Image (cartoon, rainbow, N blue to C red; front, side, top):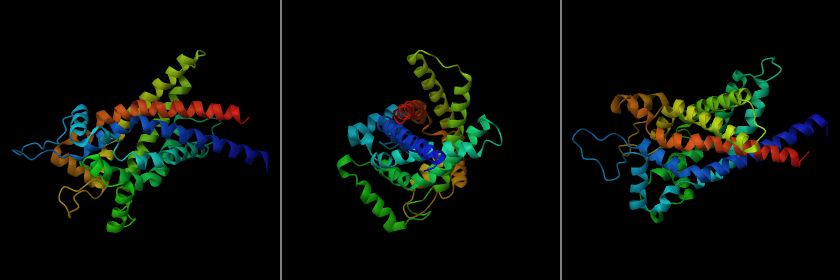
Length: 305
């Protein structure tokens, strides 16, 4: 086997291993906040004069309290199986394709630029979105279910129901694909672009703990910025993939159309519903992923030398 090909395969294997490890660790720790984010995004503002439902959530901690009381403590892990199943290959694909897109977007430069990192992140996010959207559709359906844990259908039952009723296409298992592409593409463009650009500017520390905190800090800011910018796409995605307000009538169809409806009926601020739990998840979650990736990759690189 040619040495160049052997080295490429070695690096690709390490990127897949490190990326998969990062995704698995992150989703196991941060899933409850993703569920809270989805619940907040799915609820529409009550009509004028209408009483608020007992399951109307007034923020992150109110949502956690009401879910734990009415659905059980373990309800905070509803819908975790689809992301667990997909996070390892999803993050593996994200980090693998990011490294490959970096080579494509060098534009003749001898080293990556901030534009290189941003465009590579955008490409990785779009690729990731196409892979994970069916899992996202199932996850949102499970997270929207407000029954107690023992009464919630299984992941496989929900998947079969979606396929039987609507098929695999853009009205079925791949509903909300463009919103997922927008959400993941924008997030990863900022996430990777900021992290790698700033990491190259802020000096490294020889002390392991200080170096760890440096990476965590940059990763936290990267995840937070990406979350703030891309959340309107996330709200549109939740509305498109979640239960429609009137059964049998599709209110939220397209990405931009859903954003317009939400802003017109509920105010512009409604496009930022779920921002607090999203930042609480993807700020530290983004840091966890990047730091785990860096350390696992370094371990594998040293081990397989």
